Length: 225
Image (cartoon, rainbow, N blue to C red; front, side, top):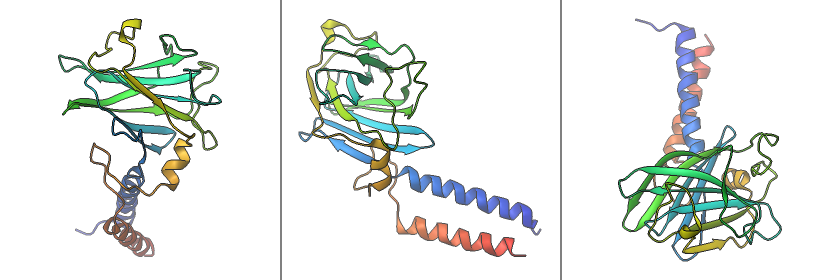
């Protein structure tokens, strides 16, 4: 049975859109602490940042972002902290800090957990967050825009999880600050991925681009009748 022109064209447009989204989602930017103990990968799509965070720990693992002058002393940190409990429950919390005291939980949490795991002494947390939030609703949220640059900060606890919340007894075992600021959105647009995120997102391949080109030709052919 011959497929009507309108249906076939719509089908091809939908397929092409799905392929393009898949290609875009493979553009992960990456930051590493340099000692192999912390790694952050991220990508961007439709006002949402998608993160993969890895810490060399079986305790809690955290990353923070700040636009402060030097990124130090926990000034205006927007923090995502997550991990896996001893009974294999997964968790993530948002925190906000203004100084070097135990940070408060974000009253309007924006970080959404996708998955978390522990393997071979490493904790991995996959999560996402809208890039821009309602500043009137929470003025302490970092706003990730195409012109915003942030320091990347990280910390983790060696053995203890923080599924019930941070306390002074659960202070970090290790922490650090990036040596420069990063524009997270623009990094994903300019970065040519050199590694694959741990969840298996694929690189842009010649085969994928060839397939997209073939679909474009088919769409042009179908809609020409």
